[in-house]
Image (cartoon, rainbow, N blue to C red):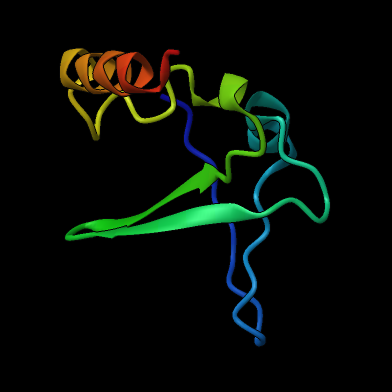
Length: 79
């Protein structure tokens, strides 16, 4: 896990370090999701296409349950 430091501006803005933006493929104007947890804030890129979901919420959801749900929903929509 890499750690970087940043400061909150007087307007409440936070700069995400360049290395993190590159890893997460975040660019100027992109939206992010802020998740408040007991011990801090998690920042994740907002999903703009389904391919960005791969591995993004691994710690927050049960992958097997999510896959089963998606499979069952897909079966409902098949003609």
